[in-house]
Length: 177
Image (cartoon, rainbow, N blue to C red):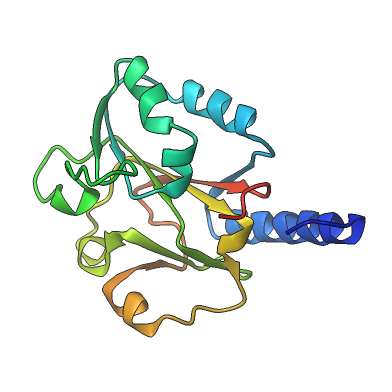
């Protein structure tokens, strides 16, 4: 994606602009520029409580589930790169909701609106949120506008941070998958 100095500069400007828009909407933002920074960040997540891990190519590629499991975390996950369904956020109809939920952002607009398919509109409407959400987004997830109307009707579209949630957006400019 970033093949020239101009591409890198445009990406840096886009990431900084998007970070500011997200902060204005109440989110915490973090920019991690390589796999080592992501792994260090994952290690910094406290080991207490239940962790839900969504359908994330990023999490699978970086082996985030393995890192967390080695720390002795209780993990509920929906996908690990194999046909290995265990439990996704949508099945947390009763307690315990996970204390932490790691997910990917399926699409994020330059204005900071996010489509997250690991979370349904129904669960969002019922205000069924974990205490902390950590959502990852690579450059390929940044779009001018959403173009998938059926997904927008079925899944959660976050326009602002939910009041009751500590919500961190982790932008990964080096990831393009």
